[in-house]
Amino acid sequence: MQQGGNKMSHDAFDRRTTDWYIDKLMQSLVFIGGISAIIFIIGIFVFITMEGMDFVISRLDPVEFFTSEYWFPSDEDDPEFGILALIAGTASVTGLAMLVAIPFALGAAIYVGEFATGKTREYLKVLVELLAAIPSVVWGFIGLSIMNPLIIDVFDVPVGLNILNAGIILGLMAAPIMASIAEDALKAVPDGYREAAEAMGATRWQVIFKVVLPAAKNGLLGAVLLGVGRGFGETMAVLMATGHSVNMPDSIFDSVRALTATIAAELGETAVGSDHYGVLFTIGIFLFLITFLINLTADLIVRGVRKG
Amino acid sequence: MFEISELNKRNRKTQKLFQILFMMMTLLLITPVLIILGTLIYKGGSIISVDFLFTHPTDGMTAGGIFPALFGTVWIVAVALLASVPIGVAAAIYLSEYAPDNWLTRIINLAIINLAGVPSIVHALFGVGAFVIFFKFGTSILAASLTLAIMTLPVVIVASRESLQAVPKAFREACWNMGATRWQTIRRVVLPNAVSGILTGVILEVSRTTGETAPIMFTGAAFFLPFLPQSVFDQTMALSLHLFVVSTQVPGVPEELPYGVALVLIAMVLLMNSISIAFRMYLRGKKKW
Image 1: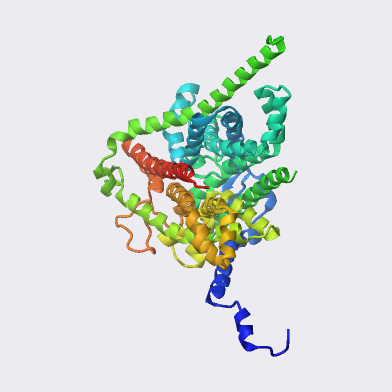
Image 2: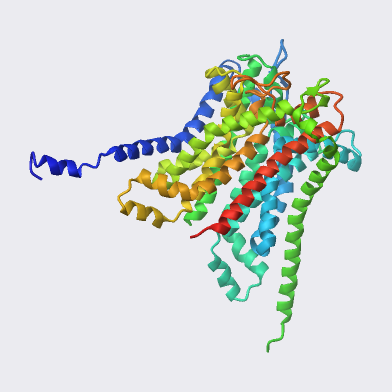
């Protein structure tokens, strides 16, 4: 290239036409769209921390917060901010829900993914997808109006809004989601594995138990973890089906109150900036961090598989 | 020589046993829901009428229809879509067409998973802190819709990305070879081939947005309002919250009323999901490559 070369040919090689500028502009725009998810997730953390910060700095006693079972946040003289009973409520309901959901979800995933064929398989997949779409407030209503009298009748207990009710409801909610993620994990196992085992004379169930399930182990674990995350963060259904009373549970027939439901029930009646308002946002920060951790772990486990 | 051995017989038996066991589990997962749907139709079907859908609630919400709640839900969903579809599709285009395989892309994917995994009530707290208080929208349709838009963004991104990635690489290469810029290729070749797949994702998002309750409780939906909203800065009633209110907060509601509301809500959601699924199957059948 010569210094001060022919101006004409220089222009001819200049690709910066209008289209070039539009291309660059759109590239920047979709990039902003791309990083929007990061901006929003940081935004969520920043804004709930902003609202909860005053309380965390001036009032929060971490030991009392996590170990006291007394939750009287709006008491004027001597408010108590202990969330142990709420954690116990969330944990017991989620635990029971997982006992209900995990066997059914994995069983359904194995049947749909490995046994069912053709049309049956399509229909089952559609049904599972529709199951996952039922809104949580409808599930809560089912707990309230169908499960409640049913539990009172069957177990002869005075109140049917309890851990059992919410656990079953939450299990039914989480199972379809877990089933479809688990089915994806089974599908990700290469067909060559199955064919090799079948060529060795293994029957279908031997292939599933000895080859497919071990190979899909991490993906299945990821599915279970995501289900736990769902159960943990569910709000309307547990608000309506647990009975919503602060209680350290002794049996599955006890009413409890969940962390999420506490925020939903009480935020409306607090004054912006009050301690009660602050502690609800602090619970929000706690919920955010726990679910973040669960999702991160699930992602790392599932990704580990893809690399291996 | 070709007789079935004892071992073979036993293996076959076990296989049959397991197949039946897993089938039972699948059916057990599905039957409760069919029973529930049946109950909703049985108990709530009688109240559903044109009047029920198009009149206001009366007598302290113990009688009358659900029109303001339906109207409000349509508003909230529409505004939420206006916000989330452009952002979601842009994000999908970036992830499918531009994003290199690096740490930033991994963080974006992790953020999307987390956006979908954060509890709905935490989204509600964010909506209160950000839109209601910080941006001073007050409790309004706008605040509620933006909260829902961010919450359901992953639905649009994931569905759009999938349908963009399903467009064969050769289509793009052919276009680049003709001298088209990257954006011209996306605009004229990739998007037209992916738009119907994106649409199924949007319908799914409509369904999700319709059913959500917790995120709108404190950001824009009200228990009861005598008037319809006039602009996006007004509060509104919403169908999902209305179900919560009439089934837990209002004394003396006749039994069939909440069943009717639940039936309308679930019918809207399942209808939209079915349309999305049917559309997806139709597209799969039509695919030319």
